Image 1 (cartoon, rainbow, N blue to C red):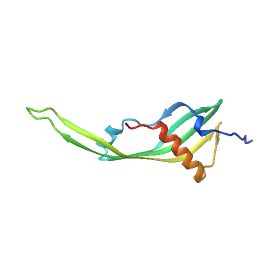
Image 2: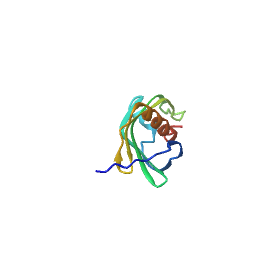
Image 3: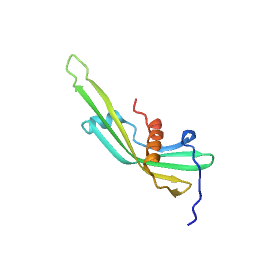
Image 4: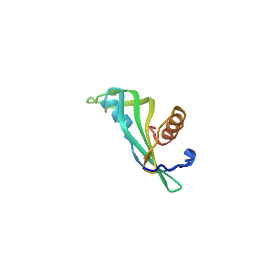
Length: 118
């Protein structure tokens, strides 16, 4: 296989698709305050070059719930206290790229821009 060198500006990626869980509040309630999923992906385009970033996404939080009574409706609240990202996969133009620590930190910042929990 022939390797092709690509220079990617990670500040100018265009998000084209994502495969990321999104209902953070539901997951905090259903999993008692913590949820983690490994196979999360963001897909980008940079000047016609496809970039795929794979990562583990973990969330922590707390919730309270007051069931309804005859006189009062149900009530509750959920708060996300921490979202962490661990990048473990990078593919550029159909070639897997080895991720060093510097690149990993850069990619984690990119991912955090596109993973919203508010």
